[in-house]
Length: 57
Image (cartoon, rainbow, N blue to C red; front, side):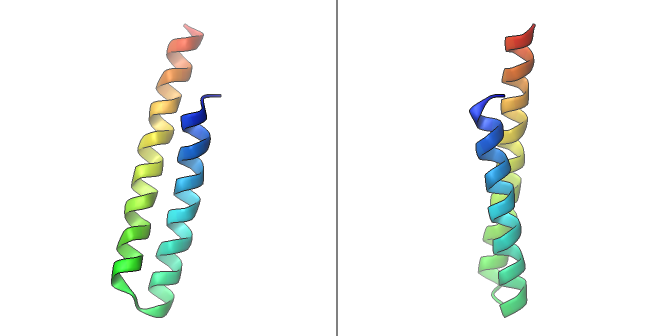
């Protein structure tokens, strides 16, 4: 498994937590930062998946 997949998954989790906390306390900036972290993590996870596929080919 590529390290990008692990880091990406961690960013998704971090983003979910930030978004939930931001929503809970009514902080729109924290909530949007969390959503951005989730998207960034998903992209990084996908890049890692592509790297794994190339390596396995």
